[in-house]
Image (cartoon, rainbow, N blue to C red):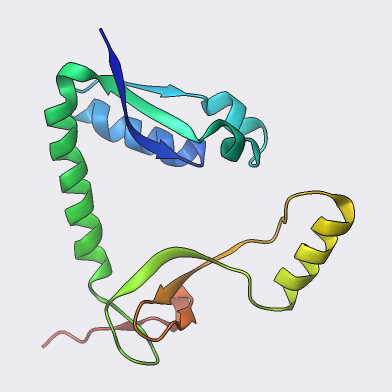
Length: 143
């Protein structure tokens, strides 16, 4: 039995949700390096993330599940519009380093030789580059 890496995650929570989805479809999934990444959030970068591996015989079924997940995500994201240019093309979970909190966290991390603690995830428009949060999202009005 040979195992193939099908997806890599940065947090144990995301990895376990994906593993649960595969096991719900009847596919055995194994997570590698989840304990090391869970000890400190900076370790996942050093080890290359948490790897979800499946049996090589199940690759076609995993591709189908990944395609379903991608379609579900696209269906959710199509209704999010940039408040500035009203484009539907955007990056989701973009890490923003704007604002005074991010500047202070960066300065503190340089002084203490640590990883910046303050991370803010936002949407970023692909058209105009505007960063916006969930509260600023315009919903498409249904006719």
